Structures are given as C-alpha cells and as structure tokens.
Length: 109
Image 1: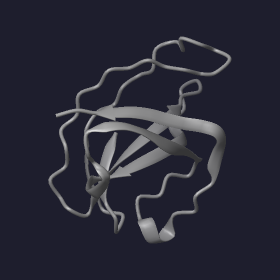
Image 2: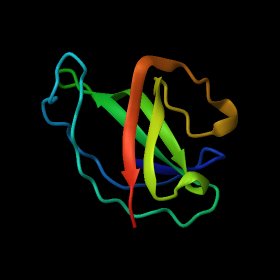
Image 3: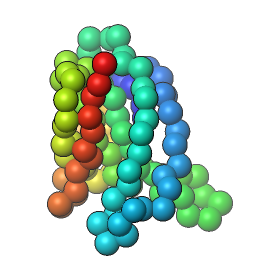
Image 4: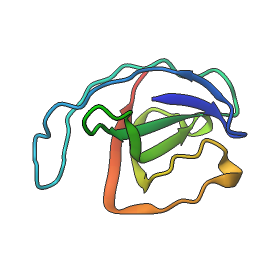
C-alpha cells in the first residue's frame, strides 16, 4: 500500500504484505484484515498494488487500484482493479480495467 499525491509524488509506503494462499482459487479470493492510517494530505490517494514475484527477480506490479482521500468515508466500497503499469500521477493514468475484478474494502473509524 502506497500513498501518493494526485501529481504522482510518492509520499510514503504504508505496508508491504505477502498474500496468503487464496480461500477460493477459482476466484482468487483473499480474506485479509489490515489496519492502516488515513493520509492527512487532501490531495493524496492510497494505492493498493498486487505484485508478482517470480524466482529471484524484483517484484513487479501486476494489478492495482486506488482510493482518493476525499472518498474515504465509513462503509463498504468495491474498487475497480486495473492492469499494470501503476501510475500515481492521475493525469498520466491509462486505466485498463481487469475484467470481473474488484477490491472490496470496508472503511471503519
């Protein structure tokens, strides 16, 4: 999970978290609980990236999604998942949705 400004400036990385084996392999469903601090910058967004590790190579982002701080209100959300590359600069994003994929999150206080 990374936090960046809409201009593309990476502010900080919150958490690197390896995914456990999926609960449902046919659907690639993962059940996770993660508590994260809310960014205080008004023009920031949280970027959730799924990275693929193959052998000894550096992990590369395969899929990603984002949630703007302005949209962070309590409740459930279904975020569209996009194919790589992940671009933090909103003006340069080329959004290629991953068909039938989403990230379901619930925001709590």
